[in-house]
Image (cartoon, rainbow, N blue to C red; front, side, top):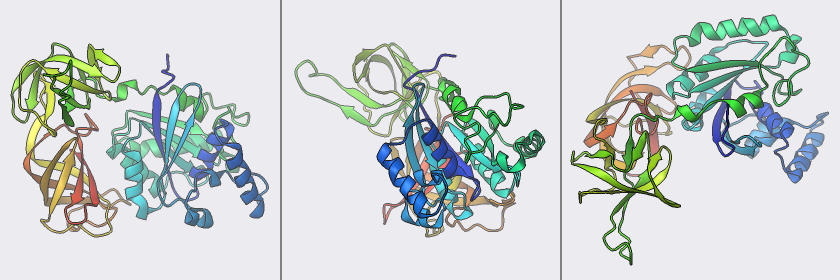
Length: 418
C-alpha cells in the first residue's frame, strides 16, 4: 500500500493509571530517535536522581510539575514526532475517572486510539470506559496494546484470553477496525522493534502499524459540505469584481461546474472557480482550505454552508446530541448558551436531559438530570436559527458542536450530534 509521506496521523492513548501510557510514548519517541539530545540528557539526570537503573521513559511526556512529582498524567499532553513514512501527533490523555473530559478533548480529532491493558489485570472497568468513549467519538481505528507482557512470561495464552475479554464487550460498539498487539513498553518489545520474546505473535510492531494504517478513507468523501468562514472582496486590480467564499471543506468533493445550494437560504448556483493557496484548482476535498466563486450573485455570509444540490444536510433547530460537560460549574436549567457549529454561531438552550451514562457500568441513568463536570449524557438542544447538521458518525466536522457560556465566554460542553 502506498503511504503519503506527508500524511499526518493523530492518535490518542488511553488506559488505566499505571498501565504504562507515558512509558509507551516515551519508548516510541526514544526508540524511533525522536528525542533531542538535551531532552534526553535532562531526563537521564532526573532518572539517576530518583535512583532508577535506566532512563525513566515516562518523564518524556509528563510535562506538568505535579505530573512528574506524582507520577500521573493530569492534562492532555501533545507530542509530535516524524518517521520517514508519516508525521504523528500524540494526545496522551489521563486515566483517572475525574479526567474523562480531558480524554474526550484529546480523542475528538484522533484517527486512532491506543488503549492500554495491563496483561496481569486484563479488561477492567477503565478499559470499557475508554473503549466506549472511543466508540462514541467515532475513532475509526482502535489499537489494543496488551502491555507488561514481560510480567506474565510473554504468555500467548494470557494474550488470547484478554482478546476474548475485550471482544466480548466491544461487539456492542461501532468501531470499524480493532487490532491487538502484545507489548512491553518498559523493555521495548513490539513497540518500535519486533519482539524476540514473542515469536508466536505474527503481526507488526506498534510503530509499523501506526505507519501503515490506512486513514485516507476516514474522511467523508461523499457528502459535500463547505461552511463559509469569510467573504473575500480584494477590490484591487484584476480582482475588482471578485467575490470569493473562503473556508475549509468539511466533507465530500467540490468541482468546478457543480450545481450547489446555499444553506439555509436554499438559493442555487454553480461553482465558477476554486482557488487554493497555490492558484486555481479543478476540485477541492476535505480538509482543504479554498475560496469558491459562484456564477450567481447570492447574499452569502459567515455561517452559511455551500453543499451539492443533490445532497443537502438536515436544517434543524432541534438537535439531539451526546454531550460531555467540560466545566467545573454544572449546567444551569434552561440557561441560554452560544452554540458553535462549523463557522455558525447561534443562541441555544438545553431543552431536556434524556439520560446520563453511568461511566462505570455504561448503563443509562434517567433519574439524575443534573449535568456536572465529566458527565456524558444524551440531551435535546433548541437553537434560535436552524443549523445544517449531519450525524457525527457520518461527518465529525458537521456533526459536532460546542457550547459557550455567554457571561464568561468559556467552553462548557462539547457534543456529538446523534
